[in-house]
Length: 351
Image (cartoon, rainbow, N blue to C red; front, side):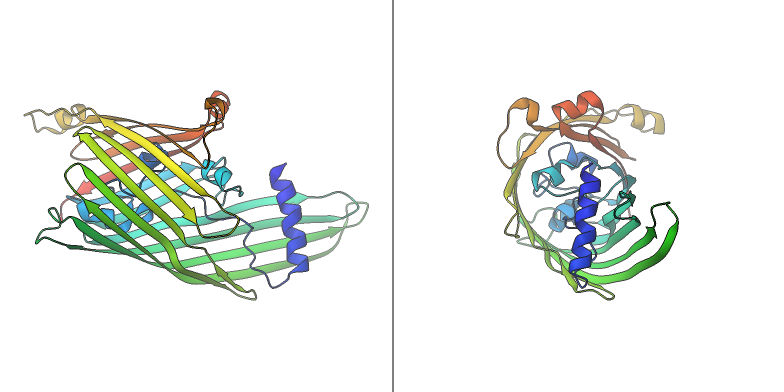
């Protein structure tokens, strides 16, 4: 029902404002990383992490090995979209992130928009529409450090994302008479290309990390036949604390710089049970990995427990792989299977 009402609004918006950008009136809501999803999305100061190009590129500076990461997701009921009161920008099961990174930077892929559906309307309109929009970003990340001769010992890390955006918008329309016969048809096709810049900084000590991320400092997309699209700046200020080596507690304050979007907050924690063995065989390495348990929440104002966005997840880390599962949704979403989830696989390797 929400999709249909949203679709009707979009059609009349396009008719009345023909030069407006063909992207729906939403904001990119896909947030990659099963690990960070499971701690409520509080990833601005989670040091280090292989999905850092999205959360804070400076966090890559703490990686001890190169990493290949793939994230699979279903985000139709995105809690982020609910918090900012927008429709989800990515629908259906999809690869939400793919990256190849080292402590010096790397390359990543991330879908921003992926929406496709058909609308059928009543006889008085005599109108049927197929709608599809897709917009992807390709990210090159570069990191640097200050305050030490080694990136492992430095207290300050800085990272930048240089982004290329590419997309396509297709809308086909069928006009029908009262007998459902097609009387006319037309289509609107537009291609989009653009660029973007993100920047992040991290200050860390042995037990404390603070991070600041500015996403989409300059992000412009140029659609053929339409006005330029500008994605607003998104800032995050985060901290993480390690009271002891196996526990991380994280918190973020976030703001999208658009007048109708609020401040919102994310908090979470991760506990890892560590163990070691002298047996270096493949089987022993897999069996003796370290399981992690995570929980968190995100909100713009505190709610009763039944209405809170609850994030949960688990992970399993070995020397040869890490696998993570993150879930998020309101309490009733878990009862009826309406939560969103992400599944992540990370393969570390030396170069």
